[in-house]
Amino acid sequence: MRHDEFLARVRERGEYANQEEAAQVTKAVLDVLAHRITPGEAKDLAAQLPAPLKAAVQTDGDQRVKSFGVEEFCRRVAERTGARPRTAQWDASAVLSTLAEAVSPGELNQIISQLPSGYAVLFGKPDLSD
Image (cartoon, rainbow, N blue to C red; front, side):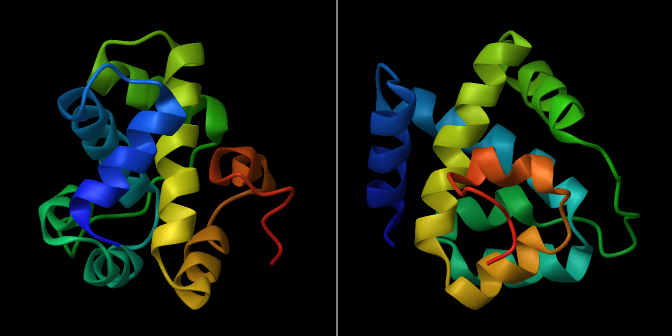
């Protein structure tokens, strides 16, 4: 998926005013996701994203994976975007459901295998088992 197409889908799903707002939210959500998955998985994810989004998921290879649930995920997104946690959940869903369409099924399975089932709703999935 091209960068402009990715952002257009995020903008539509999140009902953002413009591409810049969609880009800011996308960067924030991908940054939090990158800290929730292993550095190797973040690198694999970056390889499947459009060039401008790669930097958002690239992390220090020595980073420890931070284990946190959906509520903390949304709090961290809210912290980066200045939104309320409920709005951040909407933002995360707009980005992660688009991400689910943008990467290969195998890559998506690798990402979601590292997350508890509560994340399913953010990816637009009934559960994270597929």
